[in-house]
Image (cartoon, rainbow, N blue to C red; front, side, top):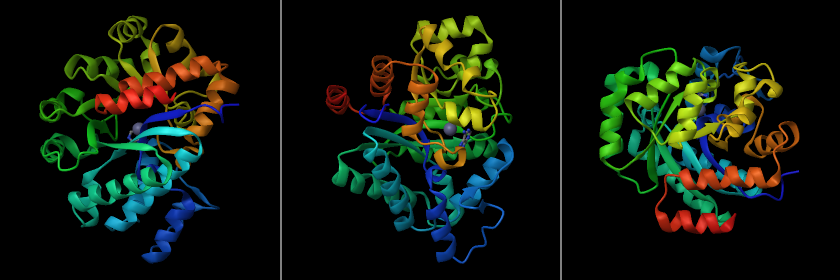
Length: 322
Ligand code: ADE
Ligand code: ZN
């Protein structure tokens, strides 16, 4: 049982954290027909591309600053109730533009939700702005310039998500240069839907301190050694990987092998209700299915805080809470 353990999360896409019941309430509010997207209280998707389409459809149910505040507050409050002291949510200002409220209102709403959850529960939250591969390098550079304005102090990181089978990391090098130059922490989705080379590609071209997923590095022993030697932190999301059939089941998941090889790993939920999981459940799986001890799991939580995109006094305070 991991209920008593403190938890931390580095990788959760905020629209992907919307509980189906909340998405349904939003659909009613805006009179949107979500049949085919939500059925029997669960999101409906068949493969990764379909998942991304479903994700975008759910994102479009959140249309105002207040909607986004509600979403962030609901998610972080649920995390805090499970013993979580820190959470980085992945946010996409491009969604703010898609729905017409604009990036500033989108970020302001999410920040209000983070602050409300902190006031209620003490949970510390930050935002990672993501660029989206399938929107291409030009859109990514615009988003990077937006992120570089550092309009909100809770925006502390920069990520690349979306369809991993489109473009190379090198195509986004300029966007990452912009983000790094303004002091944002960097992580990149790689080694999830495509193989080890995508992780190598990310490390060679951008040198992020963290990799989102990275689990398919296991296909290349030299790469695993490099990740361990360089101390790159992997934001692993086992429930997501099994749900998307990156690995057939938890027994086949490489978390244990990466850990034994000396890689710095963390536990994360990715898009929890889409993948029928939660951060709490990821901790349970690590403990009950993968056989990690409480000490080992606490080590992963410590790794998450060590790798968090936060100021040093906050990091120190969080580390002392574990
Ligand atoms: N966007 C939302 N969830 C994602 C994932 N697991 N991989 C890539 N892009 C995403
Ligand atoms: Zn992700």
